[in-house]
Length: 354
Image (cartoon, rainbow, N blue to C red; front, side, top):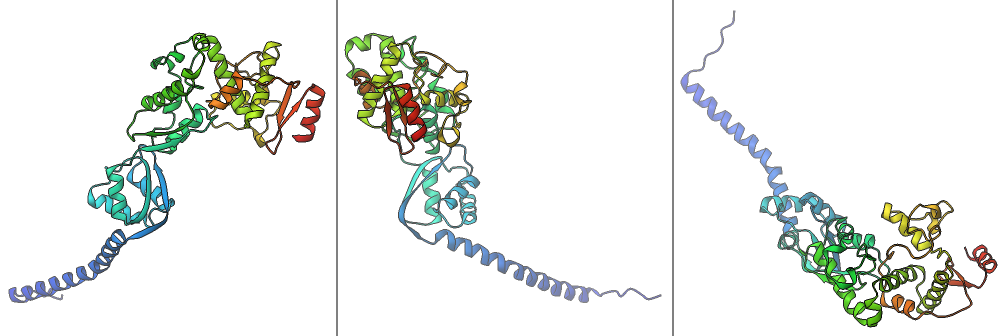
């Protein structure tokens, strides 16, 4: 039977020295690629790059640093999301990056981008076009990082929370129609009620206070004007056409005819699903059968509240309608408005232009 060799104490010490050297050598070989990788990341973080054109991005609320890294890379602000992630983790900024709208121009590097996001954005500047609904405004504000999606839709249903005189009416059920279209600047941390109130104050200055006192005093009349203006706003674009359409809708109301405004049907669907859109941009026979108080094909008179936020031109068109022999109109595929005096002319126009 073979004997197991036994090392002397001196031989064992020599063995340990050799093994330590081997382990150290192995560790060294393993560390080299890691060190090279760390150096490469550090170079990437510090390497400057320039923007040929300003780049604006929106970081939604509740975005984590992993989400932000992807947004930055997809928008072309940075080229290496991994380097950004490692930098914010190593620098302790991963939990300090703020939501909001940012604009980058000039020369930056990954580190300066991260530092900018940690400092927070400048004020949010948002343009609300004429004819936007509360659903559109909610998306515009959430895309800009000013609010969380759905917040504006919710606050718009709480008209009683605001003190403006034009809202203190049994004929007003939401903020829709009273959020004046304009370009607004908001502090990044402004709450949604402050944002809505700024739009309402603008409406007060540019619409309500410009009205005749008699109109302002008659709550039903004022609410009806804004509701009708919202229909005109969504139906036609040109100022002259708006006055003609306003005259047509006033005549239909006086004759107790259904208004049959397509835009009201679209709004009826959007109250159930804000993302709803008619197929091929045209309402079908099934679409116009939706059971809703906003469906002006099924219900006579005005809808219960505005279907959009009109600009001053549409409001003025309702206040000063143009008399004509027309009773019908449609929007052709090229955007032109075709007017008709009889239902026969209108049906012929539909066959020709739609």
